[in-house]
Length: 207
Image (cartoon, rainbow, N blue to C red; front, side, top):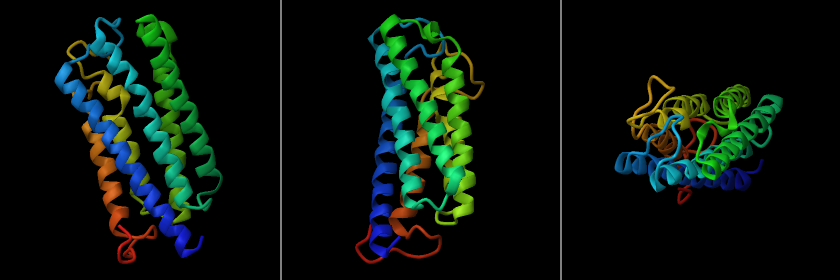
């Protein structure tokens, strides 16, 4: 990867993380302001429909981040990074199917165990991505693990469990996605100020 390629990848990564942070923050704000029921209860109003539909951009934002992280490493994350990205994509696809089916039927149980399985699969993908990133030594070692923790404590399971009638996650609370938004912001700030390789400042005007 040339210096120009690295700089372009860094900028794309920062943009992707920034957009993902906005999506997570918007989701959390909607939950705090409108109080959807969450959990496995049937959809009761337009608020629940919108909240369910927000799962689509929310999950796709994670996939975009994982792909941007992989592109920034130019394949140096190896098989672990490649398999991790594909695994994450499968999990995200599961969330999208859950969202579409729930909006269509009004019943979160319509897809059976797909929702928790999608969460498990995305976590597996993130763990593999973290392993590949650690081996590549292009990104700071803490970035992908931090995003993984953000997905656990501020992802769809935590947020969907945070409503007044939420079920499932013991650590869910309304606005949990602010945690994930903050994680994305921290990672974006890291690469807005520094090159991809840890400890090297970006070129002037490269923010």
